[in-house]
Amino acid sequence: MFNRYKLFDLIVESEVPIEETPCLNGDEAPDVIVKFGEISVADAAQHPRTFYFSDGISWYCVLSESHLIFSNIYAEYEVLDGNTITIRPHVNKDNELIRTFLLGSALGVLQEQRGRIPIHGGAICINGKAAIFSGNSGAGKSTITSSLVRRGYPFLSDDVSTISLKDGAPKVIPAYPQRKLRRDACIQLGYNPEKDLILIDGIRDKYAIRSDPMWQEERMPLGWIFEIALGMPGYPMMITPIDGVGSLGVFTRNIYRPWVSKELGFNPAKTKQIFAIAAASKSFRIRRPVDSQSVEEITDLAINAILNGI
Image (tube, rainbow, N blue to C red; front, side, top):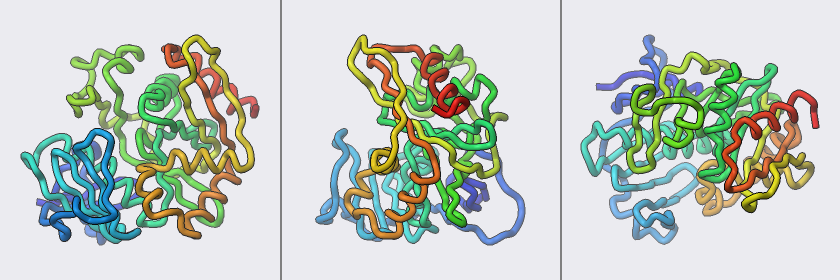
């Protein structure tokens, strides 16, 4: 059975039930089809353009800009032409993590195939503009975005912030009304994981807040991007504006699933987009010591940079 959903401003007709967002009514033609089926390249791991994750269980096979396959212990996924995702499960079709990787890696790759720029990070609405918080896994992106939500700022996305250029103005596209947090971040922010939230990834100890009323459903102009980096233990927390070529690096380093872009390279159209996005927004780096747990201090730094224009 197929149901319809709105994800990343796209009508998605999916054989996979997507509990993270409500079903849609209506008969408009879908932008994207998600289905179970066979993958057209059965042994993609032997393809010469294949490379592996560091965990040794997942790999990507980049066949072209419009055709990508990846696999993990839960399923094999094929993303084609920006409009079709085919899933061949290795486990029960109802496995929660099949949907997790659909909403993350598969839809993230699909955004690029549709000419958008996906950034690994969450987006928050502040004073009529979007602020993206990016960085490597473990830097504290989701914790900081959730801290801002608890201060009353709506969010557009939690893990993949997709930027679209229209008339030269970059806008961040709303993803879906869910936020994810690791157990330690849940506790740090005052949640009881078992009581308040839904366990969605037992391996990485991640929990979800679904149907979040703080979700912003309209596109917002991109105002700022913050790259969160870990510094040496004991070093002071600091924020630094990044200008010129440095701001380009913030976007290219934090593009979602960077090994795909590394494998294919940045074509002229994508490069032009990133230049325009960087020129139209402000970039900052927040460096926090690896031993710091001061979410409130990082949040204050970001808010001060936005409100005072440092």
